Length: 358
Image: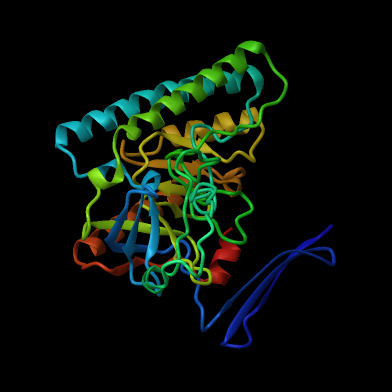
C-alpha cells in the first residue's frame, strides 16, 4: 500500500502532520502556536536543588517549571571530584566499553545479532531511559508543587533501553528508526541492554551474556558516588529535554546530548564508538555501514549512529551529514561559552522539518 504524509499548515495557530498507509492513519502529530515542543532542545541550566532521596537534581533551564535530572543522566565530566578520579573513572568506563563492543561484534557475527550494537537508540523516551513516574500526591507539599511542578522521577536502579551510544537520542513522533538519539539518545548511561537475538550458536549467546555483564560492571563504577557528593546547587550544566512537561510535572532532562541528522545521529559527549540502527538487519549492510563509520573523522569524545534512512546512502552522503552535525556541535559549544544560565542554546527543528527528516 502507498504511504503518504499529509501536512496541514494553513492555519498559523496550529500545524498538523499525518502519515497514512492507504486510508489508515499510522502517525499523527500537531504543534500549536501556544505550546511549542521543547523535546530535543538544548539548554544551559543551573542546579536549583539536589535531592539525595531521589538521587536526582532539579534544574532551572528557563522552562515553565524546573526540570528533573536523574543522576544516571549526568555525565561524569560534571562530577565535582578531583581531576585524577574523574580521569580514572572515564578510563575504566572506556576500557569496559571497548571490551563490551568487541564481544557484541563477535556475538553479532556468530549468531546474526539484531540489537543496538553497544548503544541504544532513542534519545528521547529511550534516552530518558524508560522514565518511571512515581506518584506525587497533589496534597503533599504544595510549595514543592508550585516550585518544581511535581516530581517526575526516573528509576536509577534499573534502566531498560538507551537512546544513543551511551546516552540516547532525541526522538519525536515521526522517528520511525528509534534513533533519536537520538533516538538517544538514549546510550547505556544506566540502562540495561535489550538486544534481540535470532537463534544462533551457543558461543554467540555466551559472548552476548559476557557483554551484558561488562555493561553492568561499567554502570556499577558510578555507583561509588552519590549525587549529593558530586553535584552541587548553582552548578551549571548543558542539558537536553528528553520528555515534555506534562501537567504539573517538569520536563525530564539528560546531559548526554544527541543531535539528529538525516542519516546520522551524533552523540557529542558519548565516546564509546559508533553503531548502526537496529532496524538494519542485513549483515552485509551493517558491515558496509560500520566500515563507513570507521572512516569518519570521529573524535574519541564522540559517538555516531547511522540511521535507517542511511541504508541506501553512499559514504559521501553519510559523511556530509556527519560533517553538518559536527559543525552544528561547534556552534552549540560557541554559543554555550557566551551564554549565562538559564538559556536556550539550541532549538530542535519545527514539526514539519522533523516529520520530513524522520
